[in-house]
Length: 90
Image (cartoon, rainbow, N blue to C red; front, side):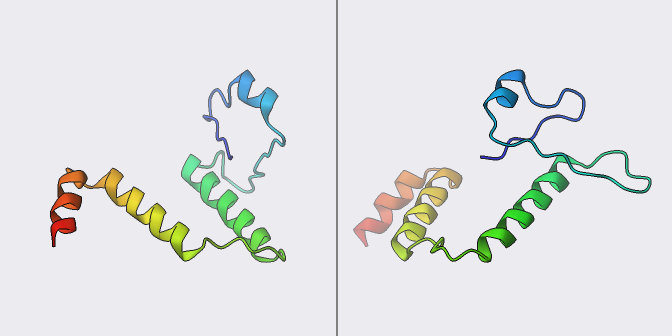
C-alpha cells in the first residue's frame, strides 16, 4: 500500500511507525512542493516500471479482470442490481 500525507502534517505517527519504507521526493528549482496527485503519479510510474522489468507474472487473469470490472461497474452505476436482473432475463 502507498500512503501519502498532507503537506502540512504529513502522515500520522501510526502510519509512520507501521510503514516499511519512507520516501521523500526531492525538488529542484523554484518548486516548493508537489501536489499529492503528482506524488501519486510519480510513485505509480516508478513502481510500474520496476515491476515491468521483473521476471514475474503480475498480470491479472481474464477471469480476475472480468470479476473486477463487474464489481467496479456495480459500484459506479446507480441501481446496478436492477440492471443486472433486467439483463439476466434476456
